[in-house]
Picture: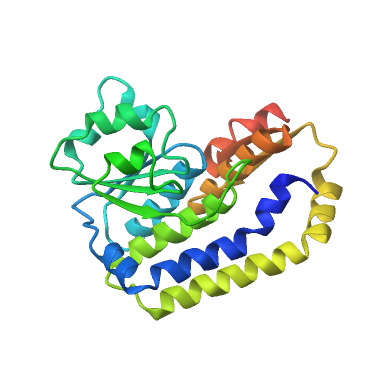
Length: 248
C-alpha cells in the first residue's frame, strides 16, 4: 500500500484525537470565545477552501451570512472583503503557503483573525488573534487527515456560534470516526467497484449540486493531485452546456 493510503487509514484516529482535545474545558472555552461577526469570512486554498465552503453553506442554512473565498483571490485588485470582514477564519494545513503572509498583511486591525492550522507555530498562527489546532498529526502526502479534521473543527466552530457545542456534537464526531473506519475496512471492495465502472475512462467528471458540488471539487482535485488522472468538477447547472456537450 502507499503512504497516502497509510495516512487515510489514520483518519479515524486523527478525528478522535481532535474531538478528545476540544472536549477539554480549556479548548472548549477557546471555541466558545471566537466571535462570529455579522458575516464570517472563510479563507483557504485547495482542500482547506473546500472545507470553508462547506462550513459557510452550513452556517447559511442556519441563518448566519457566512462567505468562503479562495485566499489567493484576495490578492487581486478590487478586493473589498478583507476591508469589511469582522471575523476571518483562515484555514491552512501548513499555515505557511505563499498567500498567507500577503493576505494577512491586508487585514484591518479591527478584524478578528482565527487560524485553523496543523502547525501552531506557523506564519498564519503567529499572525492570528486566536489559533485552533487541527491535531491531525504528521501528513506527508496530499490532504486527507487534515481535510477531515478541518471539516470537523469548522463544524464544532459553527455549533459554538449557534449555541450548540454540547455532548451531542462530540457524539456525532465519534459516529463519523466509526463510519470512516468501517469504510476503510471495506476499501478493497469499494475500490474494485469504482475501478470496474470508471477505471478505463480517460477523463472523469465529478458532478454535484449544493454541498455535494464541493465534494465533487475535492474528489476531482484528489484524482488530479494524487492519482495523476484527468478529472474535472462541475455543479449540475454548468455541466449540461459543458462536459455533457463535449462528450456528446
